[in-house]
Length: 543
Ligand SMILES: Cc1cc2nc3c(=O)[nH]c(=O)nc-3n(C[C@H](O)[C@H](O)[C@H](O)COP(=O)(O)OP(=O)(O)OC[C@H]3O[C@@H](n4cnc5c(N)ncnc54)[C@H](O)[C@@H]3O)c2cc1C
Ligand SMILES: *[C@@H]1O[C@H](CO)[C@@H](O)[C@H](O)[C@H]1NC(C)=O
Ligand SMILES: *[C@@H]1O[C@H](CO)[C@@H](O)[C@H](O)[C@H]1NC(C)=O
Ligand SMILES: *[C@@H]1O[C@H](CO)[C@@H](O)[C@H](O)[C@H]1NC(C)=O
Ligand SMILES: *[C@@H]1O[C@H](CO)[C@@H](O)[C@H](O)[C@H]1NC(C)=O
Ligand SMILES: *[C@@H]1O[C@H](CO)[C@@H](O)[C@H](O)[C@H]1NC(C)=O
Image (cartoon, rainbow, N blue to C red; front, side, top):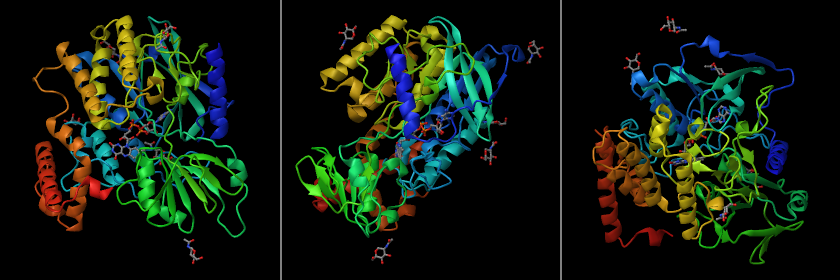
């Protein structure tokens, strides 16, 4: 009960903090129930939530199962936006805080990894795509993927999943799911499904730190100065908006690095970083330690220094792991417990967790970051795609999709629940042994690329050993992907030299297949490494 009360409380504070687009059903809702009798020949029904990289991967994974396995399955994907692509699909309008934008995407966004490493295996970016493309290419890639593999007819865009609850026991039951169309939010359709697959992304709910004195500081804009603001990076769009402002960027992750490069180029900018973190190469920023507190006229840092000329604080402080629809109970469903409990200060651990829980950093207990081990429902009833962080998403999503599809087709491929729980406890113990708190680092691949690749290889190897996939004796993650992830900084420097020389065509002409993209990257690595050796340059001289 305590956990439920906490969940309700934190949901309340969540919705109070953010006025979201109308995800909540109104009281005048008409509930339309699609009865199972209307679908007599369906032996299994599966709902997928989200049509970003993760949702598309699992949709294709399920459709790739042999026809005789899945011909009587109903597979429905719900996407609340107007098109596929998730974070890569640009918002039609500039954000209006505090209403959350549909995506954190900003106009200057380019990938920070070479695109061949970001692909679903076997499906390349089109010929001529710059190695570090702007976001439009990545969005188009997702659109092309959905069209090429005929995924579109399973995708219901403009459909928001409002609530999903489990009606049943740990052995059997159904998901009751409330869905609404974005153009008719007053009509809620209630559907039931055997399996629910969550691919809702984790760059949507900002993590907002708070400091003593921030309200006093915000309320005390000096005369003739721009209005003081503290905004999360999810609202960040154009650096030009910061001209004539003095800015503090908080955080050194991907968003903080991009903001430092972009905002630092147009105005006086500080970057507040934890010890050991450095600004990106070429960023025109002054490094500051973490913020300690605010006074009525200054930002004070942990080393005691303070700045009184600051106008804007950009919080590049990351995102929370939330699945609001899983924490809401469908209308008139008779369900009494939410599928997912939100409990920020949880003291439970995987072995003692009585319910599926998010502490906003970590969703647990999950097997392999995928299947729920909650005692409330069978493990294959609920799966997540795309939770791992610090991993190349599309290949990882594809590996997870293979794992999920085969486990849904035949749950006996999975170990017994107790064994999976032991596996999870061992994973968490391993994270602890390396000096991290698994309840803090959550789904981060703290061991870097090696761990991220081992994770994907293990999922696929498992299916090969179980005889579900042919074993060609190779690991899932190809050697060229391993190399290109490892050398992605070097490749970025190589590619900026290519662009400086206007030499793109020479490198990219005739490059279409995955093997050819791989060979371009091998050649670029050699070319750049040699040049850096000759010129005594390298990562260190850029720092
Ligand atoms: C700014 C930014 C830059 C990035 N750059 C890179 C990069 O350079 N390289 C890289 O490899 N990765 C990068 N990433 C990581 C990126 O998140 C992944 O590449 C990947 O696209 C995430 O896909 P996803 O499907 O997991 O989530 P998302 O793309 O977030 O998709 C989730 C989808 O679910 C839908 N949805 C959510 N809730 C509901 C609901 N209740 N009902 C219906 N639909 C719902 C959403 O509308 C959304 O379309 C970046 C991320 C961000 C935010
Ligand atoms: C269900 O299957 C039966 C027999 O295979 C068939 O005659 C009928 O048309 C099918 N119904 C639907 C709704 O597909
Ligand atoms: C989705 O909604 C938008 C308007 O919000 C509309 O333009 C578009 O046609 C809709 N798409 C589908 C497939 O219904
Ligand atoms: C997509 O569907 C079309 C028409 O039904 C078919 O010809 C084509 O082979 C399909 N493509 C794939 C990749 O399955
Ligand atoms: C910045 O300040 C200068 C000098 O006051 C002014 O001329 C300019 O228009 C300002 N630019 C923006 C983008 O606000
Ligand atoms: C997890 O919870 C179980 C049961 O309460 C307890 O025995 C165990 O010590 C806990 N483990 C950790 C690492 O906290």
